[in-house]
Length: 97
Image (cartoon, rainbow, N blue to C red; front, side, top):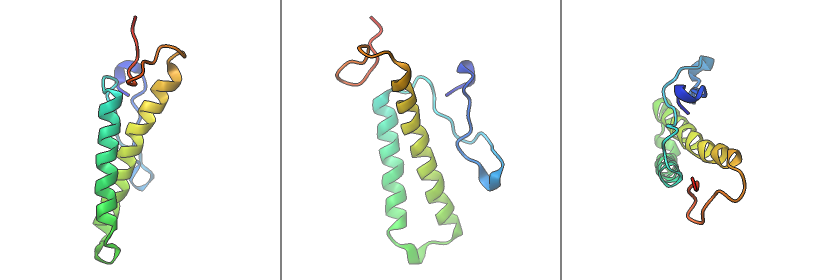
């Protein structure tokens, strides 16, 4: 979400203080958003596979990777909820006809 839409929401709230470190562009395609989410989750998963080697920085990195993935997925879900039925094509993009 960007400022132009009035939906510029923070996705990180470090120590309870919201700060705009990451936001999702209104122009991102569904495919790009889901590809990015998958990438962030795969990285978080690979980091978490060695819990005995994790320090606090690594734990926070995992939290942030998961939060970024969630932001991307939430943007797709929210876009889907805003689109009237019948305007979504089979490949998942909005039909502007």
